[in-house]
Image 1: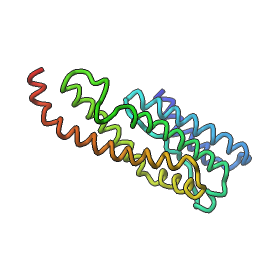
Image 2 (image 1 turned 60 degrees about the vertical axis):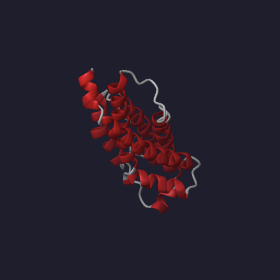
Image 3 (image 1 turned 45 degrees about the horizontal axis):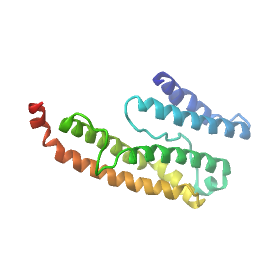
Image 4 (image 1 turned 120 degrees about the vertical axis):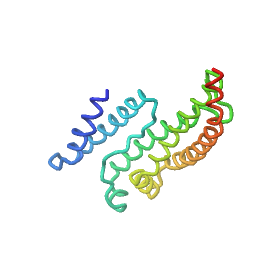
Length: 183
């Protein structure tokens, strides 16, 4: 899977995106399919590492005026945002930060859990701050996309839960050495 991801991401995706010779309808269809495939491939490849990585398209958004007139591009951006929303929802709702479930191994398991959660949420928060993500959100805001509000709410939840996970980890980390000695 990683070999396919690298080949697609480094060779085929850029070649497809840069191609100017195909008829517009063909390129739009191929680019739409490429984004869907790359989103799935990215998600599943990084899932093997227990990381949540959002597929960020290597697509030139262009000017805001041009982008909001391009219905096909808007549809692609909405599809990408739907995928981001699903991925983030899985992470955010995967645990009630007040009462984590499925944590085994006593205090050391708890520390490990909060370390992984803090790392994952912080990574998502960093990805959400990328200029491309802001550009896509801006285009969809101007178009009054119905998908934007739920995505923005999730973005706020990621920020809140990342801070909570970092706080939990900070306080639990002080118990790691004594718990390791007891174990």
